[in-house]
Length: 359
Ligand code: MRU
Image (cartoon, rainbow, N blue to C red):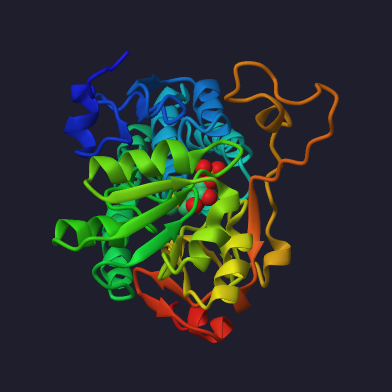
């Protein structure tokens, strides 16, 4: 099925991965698990459907999860029957806690949820109807700010590469995972718009194949030359001299620069160091968690073993009883990162100082 983008979402957000329905009572997302084969939009109203959408990666990518969760709270606030502030706040906090519990690693989720809660706390004198209006406005602000941050990151990242460069990326940190340009894919998409030509290598990103399914889809649609490789081929293309820079996204950056991103990222950073290739992390300052001193404090999401044993295969590929270890993310040591590109500037080592200087 190829569904056209519903008018409702287009009218509210002018973007196509996450948005509010026209009447503000539902969140509309593109189901990322169905891409690239089918473009299916889902209209979500219940808290269960919303939390499931995050857990099942129908909506995914750190910034997109934050934006989505903000829209969810805006919709759910409208469903709270109480007109008494204290009862409203307590119901709002239950919804917030359910959304926060979906995925632990991307800090953008709690960041956006906390901003929404702060809106409620800052306006305790307002009517519930007015609070709901303010919550919708705040969610749209979060979305608009992310688009602006992605554009700024793209501009800054573009200064790090030259026309004709080969760029290796991992997972998906493009428009589907954010707003507009994306983070790691932002400089590539912006540069392409300006007539530059990059040769992008996208790792398939086992086990859920975000690179194969989403990154190649986004880049091809934008006219970028992209080559899909299996994750275990990165060393080989680096050795051939085909890669001049690695661009990856991030789910949480600790105060010392240690960076959690999709599982497999840290291995690429080790390889890049060996082959003398600069390794850049690109992300908004909303992904920096200064309360996390180092990567050791970052909680890594563990996902279901079925994702390794059977997902995407016609029949299960492993014995049903085989033990699986399925962490969704890993932490790249700050010593392996050449620069962290944010909307406010590019941080260089020592990161403890350069990150603190951003704030
Ligand atoms: O499990 P996912 O698909 O949500 O993982 C996403 C990533 O690891 C991205 O690189 C990260 O969230 C940055 S998206 C701009």
